[in-house]
View 1 (cartoon, helix red, strand yellow):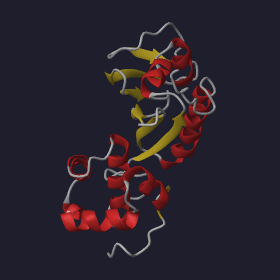
View 2: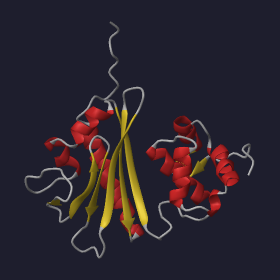
View 3: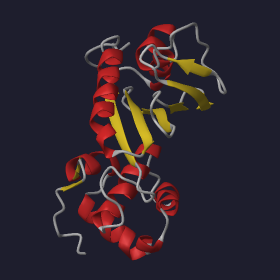
View 4: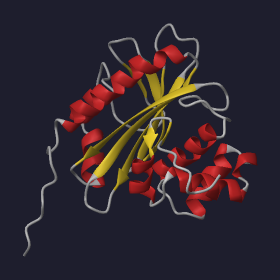
Length: 217
């Protein structure tokens, strides 16, 4: 496909958004990956290529790799190669990565996104239970960057997985991402999308509504 062929959107991601964060439009990324032979690679191999060769951030490695797979028909938007669904919520915060991590790991922050019923210390291999019947375990955690935890409602046959991660930006802002994966039923996508959207809004309400400019000395 020629890089001159316009591709306005893949899935829910516009070409303007891709260009803003990666320096290339969809109509550039598609032929780059085609030329590299990515249509024969696994998702993980595409992500590795985008990381090593093009130095994309963790978040945009996944977005570009998934978008490419959707474009050539190996993947349905919101559904992975195993036939499982996922939803993603993101929001920009006008505080830096360190401050955002401090917020999400504070008792006040935990009460919003994890909402444990009882006293809870955020560390790996720790179980939590919520009043709404959801329970799970903190699986992995890299301080300052990401937390992966299991998420299961009482009547679900299979455990799902949630990845929380923070992307710092050079201008002092940061992006908080909740990626809920391993959903067996596509009908769960909308209620979970709303759940994480509400979580992001409530966390954002605890922070400045716009970027605070530093005074020149």
